[in-house]
Image 1 (tube, rainbow, N blue to C red):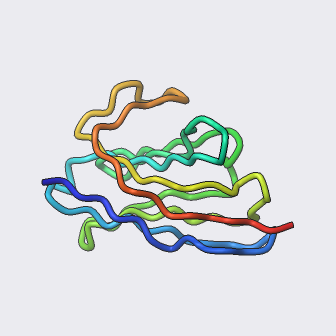
Image 2: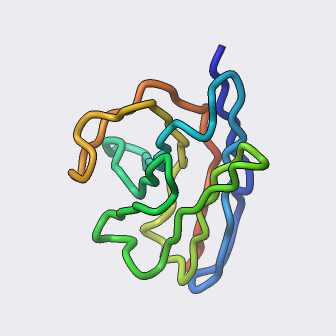
Length: 125
């Protein structure tokens, strides 16, 4: 059974930083791609960032490019999202997702099979 557990969310002031973690189990971690998505109240879920199974290929939503960095540690079965220069509009529940071969890779709407429950990020102005 695949399980994704996010952590690291919290309350931070605008301009601050947070690092989210996604601990994965029940899958062959090294062969899976991962993504981060977010959903703000009253809004649809949106793509944030994704990382290829090899770790060498990543891409981001335009809204976070240059501020967020996705990475993975295959030894720890964990994916990270480093978020810098946070803005109030980054406030949302952030979800980790995983798939062996996500469809729509490289597009603003890649599709993943497995999802975590999410962690709340709140950025105050």
